[in-house]
Image (cartoon, rainbow, N blue to C red; front, side, top):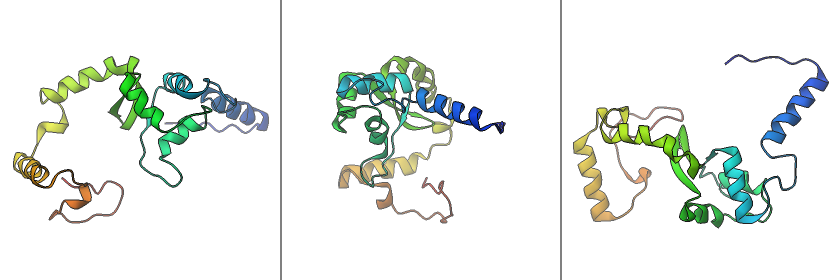
Length: 160
């Protein structure tokens, strides 16, 4: 990606306001209030990354709260139950408007048929062991699973 340097202060301010307005951050209720406002917000934004970081509240709820007066965290679950949004791995775990569901289907079909990286080199032995562990112990967290792999530094030090 090429970065364009804008040196003129008025142009910088205009572009900043344009970006903030496009994100619904310059008005007090650009999408309305409550559940209806949350629906309009996700339809306008097109994507809200689900983030489990929770200092005050889970981070994705802040996206709605900053744009939709009377937003309550339970509204994301309500929108899921109502079929207004769906969860999908779109670069990262995210809520997307249900109107975009059709765009997820080709990739889902590719996964199902084994045409993507998700299942190319699957470790069926490990998958069987994990399923057996879940059957015996119930739901577990990734950190509850021991591994013999060497620990590396960084964000992407994922277990198999």
